[in-house]
Image (cartoon, rainbow, N blue to C red):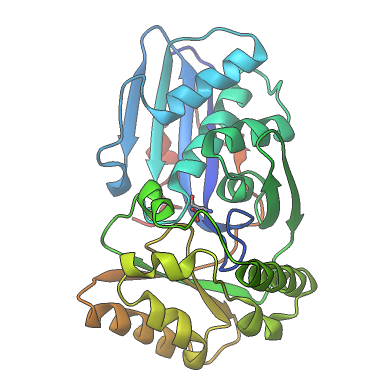
Length: 322
Ligand code: HSE
């Protein structure tokens, strides 16, 4: 590797938040770190329990998105040394592939002097994922409201309320996004479309204005969650009853299987809610891990303050969750 190497830190994300299918995303404070440098023969090193089964050759997603950035910038660096450590569970609905795409693109861009701006990276990443919710959140941080028309993605970033906390229950099984998208209908009734437009609009207004009291009524969906419920035993009960156990609202996180609840930081009922999520999944024979998270406000960042002679893991070990 040449002396020049860069490191980035990129957050996980949750998509949809109930009614905002392919539209709403929020960055979460679980992270992946990527180091990238130019070298004479490609080497990819993966660290952390979440990396099992991830490719370490040129079919690696981070390697591929780095090459897309170089192509776009008109430079050629076919051989890269990449190291990655991730705390983001794979294929669980917490945006692990979006964070790899955004982290890989941001690292490659930084490596060549940052010729691409955030909008260019957003367009490239959305084209790859084919929906802007997870990539937008990992890139910009906070809450992102976005659409993609097949050519361009547009977004507005919202600063999440300080009172907003997130409790996720992450089942032990994986659910590929293609499978969770494959169960969705191709057509919806006008009634269901109006239901989601209304609930999503009010949810965005509630989140933008900090009107958390509206979340329990607005965070409802008939577009994707009812169809996906059969894939996640216990989900229907959690979505229906989490508010009665102290949540502001509950949703499937992205394409699942993780279940997400929004919680008021001041709530005295956090233990009750956590117990309810684990018991409900447990009754269905599903083991799950809960995590208390906060919105990440910054999105992907290029790290400037690191010791070039230390390994990536040595540099981040105070921050990782493992
Ligand atoms: N909006 C996407 C979905 C997120 O629900 O399928 C998963 O990548």
